[in-house]
Image 1 (cartoon, helix red, strand yellow):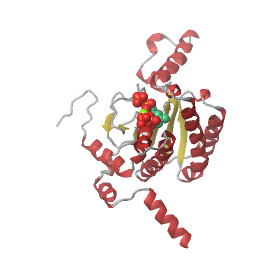
Image 2 (tube, protein in one colour):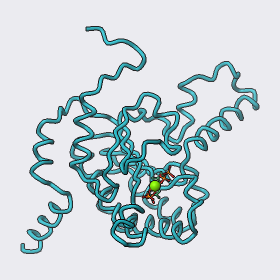
Image 3 (cartoon, protein in one colour):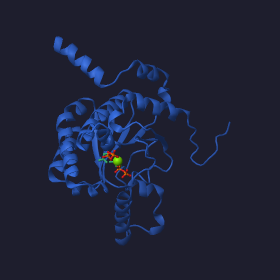
Image 4 (cartoon, helix red, strand yellow):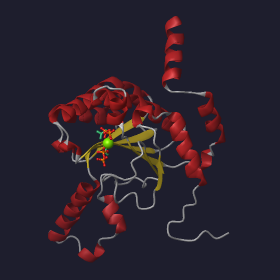
Length: 265
Ligand code: IPE
Ligand code: IPE
Ligand code: MG
């Protein structure tokens, strides 16, 4: 019993259920939520450096933010969450940091997979996965297999992901059909391109969040973000909690999305 109470309190603390967050939760219009949220999990290095700690500890601290965000997405019945974890350009970093990031990925999966599975999360890695280190790839395959029938939330984890690479992969697949004679170039349209992306069969993100006061998309979801609402914050990713996601959602609900058309009043 004591253990259960302790567990409950610990989880409550970790999920940052502040009174302020509870208030925001009340004012959110549950009928106007995004179906798909995308997040650039950035600022781990700066978070650590500001504390005089190694960058690795920032990456580790970022895991807690991800837990919090996934939990809130499940509570709010968000269908898709796409998180940018490692870009095709991140290989340029010192080998030590790359190794740490890959190690953390394996550790994260091993530690969290059962809870994610119990909560109905389907893990869907996106990117050039075949270029990831064997250990990371094996852990990912296991997570995908275990969670493949889950329906609560699709968690796209962008790993060795680049928006340009994704478009190149789509062009190559489509061009192969043209080459084989089963497709005419003139038949290629918007929908066909979307269906050849890693996010095939998913709606485009409604909301993109980038923390850490950088105002760029860093090669993330270049095609899919065409009409996405952007939300930026100076909060660094390891400090990002449910309160920040709630703030983003409240701002999102004030936006008027026109998709190039006009709102007739
Ligand atoms: C994001 O944090 C994690 C990855 C890119 C893998 P950073 O490591 O980019 O942190 P900053 O931007 O240097 O603070
Ligand atoms: C984007 O962050 C990639 C991830 C968060 C995984 P970066 O830190 O790599 O982006 P830049 O270099 O600041 O544009
Ligand atoms: Mg960064």
